[in-house]
Length: 502
Image (cartoon, rainbow, N blue to C red):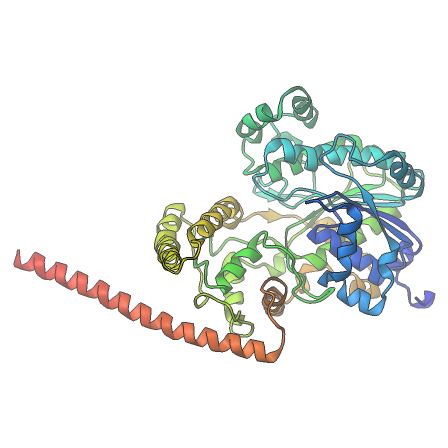
C-alpha cells in the first residue's frame, strides 16, 4: 500500500497486532475481513472455541470457503496467513486460554476488539451471564496486563438499556436492581439451576437475558476501566451488509432478516409488529467500520474522561425507517429477486396486538401447516410444518418487544466521530446512517438473502425462473382469495336468509 495514499485510520492500523473475540460470529468475521482487506495490520489473533467436534484449526480452515472472504482471497490469496486462531471460550472461568497463548497476547497485542457474545435473547441466565458479563470483566483484566495496549473496544448493543424510552450515550446503572458484583457473586454461590430460577426477579423490567447481561457488562466496564484507553460501541440490530465485502451478505437467520426470508419463502405471512414503530437496524459492514473507527479515535485521545465514551449507532433522525417501511421496501423489490423454491407467493401482514397476532397466525399459519403435514404423511414423509411454525411463533414473540415499540436515541458522539474523519476515511470506513439509501439497501439485501441464505444461483436464468414461480403462485393466490371470499359471502347470505325467515 502506497504510504502517500494511506488514510489516517489505515496509518493507525499499519503493523498493528489486533486481538478479536467473537471472530467466528457475524460481525466478527466482517471486522476481520475489513482489517485484512483495507489495512496492513500485521497480525490478527482470533479467539475461537472448539465446536461440534471440530478443533479451532479445523474451524479456522473452513474460512477459506466462507463467502465473506471470497473478495478478499481473490485479491489477496494469502491474506488469511495474517490471522492466528487462539483457543478460548468465554463461558470458561479463565476464558479457556492456555498460559502460552495468554503470554503471547500480553506481550504483543495493541488493539482489542471484544465482540464475543451470545445473542440468543432467551439464553439461560447462567450462560448469558458467563459469556456476556463475566467474560467482559475477564477480558478487561487480560487487557490491563497487555504491555503494548493502545485501545480496548467493548461491543455492546444499542438496546442494552431498553428499559428507558430515550437512550443517551451514557451509562444506566440505576436501572439494575442488583449491581454487577452482586449478580456475579450469586453465580459463584448458587447452582446454575438456582440462578436460572431467579431470572424473572433479576431481569425486572428487562425483556430478556441478552439485554440484561449486556447492561451488566456496561456497568462492569464503567467501574473497572480506570484510566484505560477504552470505549463502548453500541450498534443497533445488525442486519445484512450494504456494500462490503459484497452487498447483501448474511450468514444467519437471526433477527428481522429471518422474517423477510420466511416471507420470501411464502411461509411467514403474519407477524407481531407495529407498522409505525422505528426499526433500529444497521448493516453489518457499517458496524464493522464504526467499531474500527472507534478504536482509532479512542487511541488518539490524550485525556481520559471519567467514564469511557459510548457510541450509539442507529438510524439517523434524518433517515429513520419504521417496521412498516422495512416490510414495504422489501415488498417493493420482491419481484426483482424471488426464490425459485418458494412455497407460496410472498406477503406479510403486521399487527401490534398480541391477541390478533395469535388469531391471525392460526388461520395464516397453523391451518395451512396442518394441511401440508397431512399431505406429507399421506405421501409417507415426515410432517414438519407445525414444528416449524412453533419455532417461528416463539421467535416472533421473543422479538416482539423490539418490533412494537420505538426508542429515541442520542448519537452526538457518533456524529462527532463521523465529522472527525478525513474525506478519504469517510469513503473507506463508511458508517454514517444519515446517507444510507434504504431502497437500494433492501434491493441488495433481498439479492444477498436469495444467494447466501436461499443458496440460489445468482444468474439471470434463475431469477427468471423465480419470477415465473412467483407469477404462478400469485395467480393461485388470487383464485384462493376468490374462493374464500365467495364461501364467506355464501355463509353470510345463508345465515341472513335463515334469520329473516326465522
